[in-house]
Length: 441
Image (cartoon, rainbow, N blue to C red):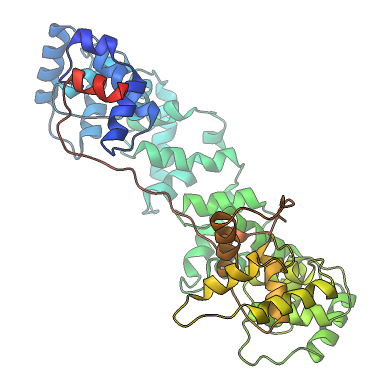
């Protein structure tokens, strides 16, 4: 942007810049280009540029440019500039601040908070001085009745903390305020702080949450509240894990269900080399029909000394309930026997070939596919079967319109997805004419 003059900046469009950047394999969002273009077009007077440079150089160095900008914005003689103007002025000093951070700092810096409010914040902060972690200390502060009654917005809270001499990042303030959004109580927060650090980190996430819920003093808590506690504690635990653990903990087990499980376990299939998922699925298939939820099944199994991952219970129950006829099972076995795995071929190749065989019944979900695989004596995981179904659809056009896929619960507990980081470049961008030519191609 610095290489474009005023006329070129006025003429170039966001779409043109985006097309040019994409042609150079630079991945950037439209909103980022748009905000950068607004900042580049902003007009800042030479007097203000000189004043900002002088103020910047006069301030003692802070750890990180954002802290330095925050301090500078609060100076009495600092000019009241807009967000794009501020970014433009800082660019001239070699300081690059995102549009969102700049807008947030401006909204806080130019607020006025009553001294009574900042005094309350300061007193509350000192009250919890024994808490070492700043985020935990801030949550404890915000849950005090007198602080909750202030109903401070996020910018107001940031300004009140700054006035009280509390040095804490805006991100931590935003995270701490989640406690207010979900109506957490001091008792909930104290119970969580007392028990969560004592739970072994080597356990699975689901088991850790369930262990927490079994601790003494557990209060009536909702899934959103429990997940918010995890979020504040900076634990990477998904809402589905939290809600399923809470459902299992709250499940009510009847004597009738216990009797049914006793009979089922007495006639359970041999373990052999079966996975827990396949073993439970076969047990359910050969047991008499009984209404049961995944949470109830998980809890009654645990009572009987059978500890299975909740995801395995969900998928086993879903597979056992798949509506598949004996005729369809026979058709699948026939196709499975016909399609042989060639030497050095990947296992997935056979699965895809079976799915695409004209004689294979239509299979649209991992749970149904799993049921068929058990029938031919094969034990495959949910992720393997899901990939095979996906690849079969991608590699070949469907033989007929596929019905809606069943909602296999909690597949995200088995299949994890990661966002790809955006590409970046350190190359110098060419002048406006080069951008215009690239955009027109």
